[in-house]
Image (tube, rainbow, N blue to C red; front, side, top):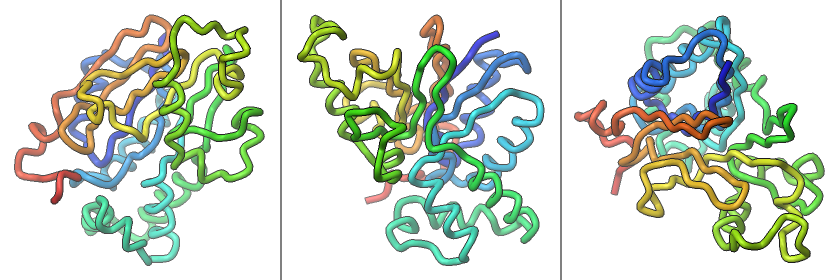
Length: 243
């Protein structure tokens, strides 16, 4: 049995199905998705429908991302935040054109059931973005940090690998968990098309929303599986690559 952490999908159903096929995922594997299932490519509603069906056969953990929060609000109220609509939300709204009101209700319940974070039996944390509390994510005061924070990743990037976990120089935020798996900040921002590791933090968002691929990492072996670049799978679309 394997456990995969899977990066930000952003409406790229073709990338998701290709990735799971390349990883040869079976029903005995656990799939932990770190959020941002929607916004960008044209199949956001279809991604959600696919994940709902997938969860019936596989052990899946769904973490909520910031784009998922925006989509959830729209499904609940019918009103889309302007900032959301210009950052992939319009494509998501369009993807729901053929879905019934009952379908939309099921998708809303799916979003509402998502976790802000997941901690496994080996004390590995899975979260969309990060947290700011020096006492750990369980003590985070502002839940929005779970899907918006970038300082955790920025902190990890500044760390010197020679600083050991029992050192006074090691940040308290990073001491609480064996490993931390995040998305939210594309590794393509750092000219990397693979998941990145900084001390005990693993970033598995490899820019599928933009010019990158969708990635999954086996959290035990650290083997990485990837789709093609999403812009090649959706050659007639811009995704979130809008000027």
